[in-house]
Image (cartoon, rainbow, N blue to C red; front, side, top):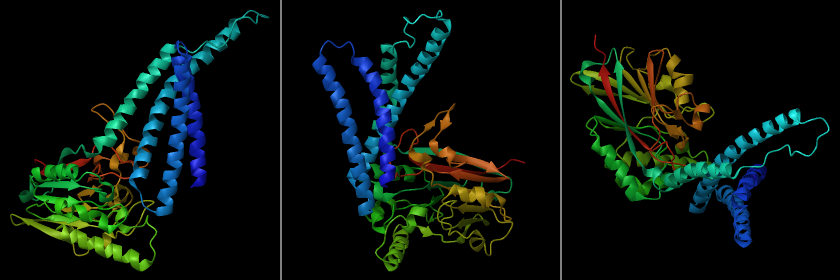
Length: 416
């Protein structure tokens, strides 16, 4: 941990110094030298206060094994600062590339023996002003994301078509949420707005695809009465995610760890969620059937407890099957190649990394460099996957561009 903080400190110091070149240009023509020095001093004071707070927050997180409000907000401040400074220096860097090229041309064209012309052009104040404006965009975005965006619940509607969907289920709707991370919530009223949005969809079935808590089962207790409001005619079903196993918490004993899992399973029951642990249930409608399969967490590089074969035991090969599996890498690594055809898999886990851009023309998030399928619908080998962007948040206590999601899936039978 100490080495990580040192490395991040060195990188941040270099970035801060580089950005300072633009600050100096912006303030160079100020008439008041006192004001200029105050801005320069405040700029560096902010850096050292922020880095000191960040180091202390890391110490608290790893020494107490629990994220406090201080650590959460320090992480928010550091990420906001880091992205803002990064954009600022990228603009400056573009100008510096031009300055270097211009210097090279001057050197080539300079008469032999002449040494009077200055090779490297001066920085332009306009470019520092442009850098400041450009940096203001992510700053404002992150400020919104940590105050309002993390509770800006958004409904994503997706129609999913199948050749062999039982006719009685044509038009059947499923509302999905994932990654509640109740230990991160700090506004019960805002959470209630998200639950009201879920209830307003009036879907036939409700599913939750894992990570009810960050680490500890009691984290969900203050919100049980809220999430318990969610009801659906054909039932409420849930699975476990990687955080639900408490693997990121240092337990005093294995017995305490096991008791935490027992309590978490009890909380699922208190929520009126049928927790599926490598098993399946049959949903009947109009004399026809749909098989809902739920597995424990299976993730590439994460906990791999899920046993799909066990969950499929006794399932008719020809049955229409929907799988709940927390981590989309399970679909990528196993499900889409499995000898048993699973029509639709519902996952979460990625959160879209809680930061990104989603527009009709551009869809990007840093998480795409880790997960091939990180949000929305995917189809390969005649099998479909939907990845929910998550209902809550963890680590970074905010969302920027990737808003908390309530998914509504409508099953449709393809026309002949």
